[in-house]
Image 1 (cartoon, rainbow, N blue to C red):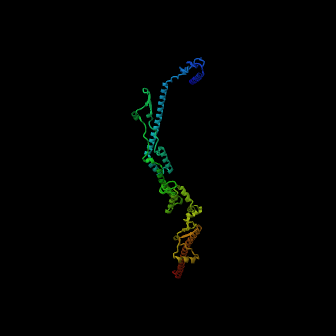
Image 2 (cartoon, helix red, strand yellow):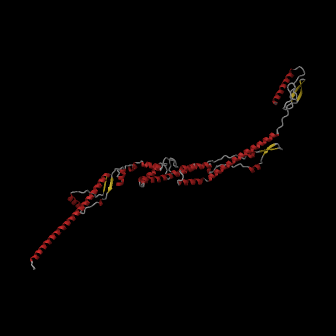
Image 3 (cartoon, helix red, strand yellow):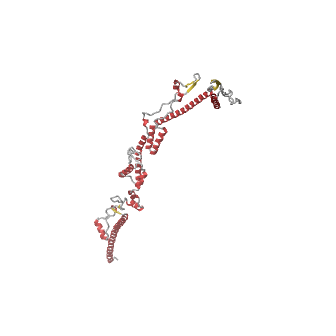
Length: 436
């Protein structure tokens, strides 16, 4: 509304100047009534009170000219200034509350880091012990390291603080001096200042801290120090020795060897087991068992028929050739000293052959080498020869006994006949005498 009023006034001033320049009389000018009516001087009463315009008459070229005096400036509103200062105080207090919250989080982060650092050595000792005893696997141990470092933020060498205490910038209104002054003096602010000390690891061991150093020591402990595809300080492609996994696998494979072969591994076989896990540091005992059971030696030893296994049990180990392959021949010891012998040695053997017409084979060596069928036939021959010799001996003994008995019978018959004859003679002699 005020803008429209001033535009209207400007219009009449321009029009009045034009008329003054063109008029031949003393001049004619338009004057606005002080009441704020219309162009014709009339008009009703306005609801809003307009500022009072004071006309000033100025002599111009022998005529009168009307100009408009600017209204007095509006005085400042004291309520608005007070409201503005109140809002500023609320903003300051909100910013300080937010700053205190950031300060609390900052101090909490520092406390968390300090707690983690103070317990780092104990954590490493405990984890190393549990890995040594097999309570945790290597992967679990590495995961625990990552979790610990992340939980305590051990790699944070520098933390961003909340900044300086914002109360040092606060101001309050001085009514007397009608100006803003600092809320706190330097001494007052120093007594309440909460600005934290900047956090930094500069110059300490934690400045260059990395969990990879401890992880590397765990790798050496688990995989050995000779290197490996997964761990070890050597960084090579072959496995390390002396690590937890290596020792565990060698021990496990040694026990598995006994289960597979039914005997303990000799020095050469143990060396082969050690070489296997040196070359394959991440292999398991099951991997070794699979490799062993697929070997030619194992297949020749165990992947055979039931009958072949029976022969191994019956006649002992299978004879192998120069290349170590089975020949399916066996050496069977039957004990030659257990066979019947001849009293007269070779002469007795010859006498037996002369008497019976049978030549007995030579079984004096006490062993025989051949296939299971040949061994079985040889054993049959031995058994039959044994029976023959025993029967021959018994038959010879029985013949001797019968001969002796018959001799005794013959001698007895002779004696009886002789006695009977002599009795007859005595009887004849007695009968020749007459005693009546």
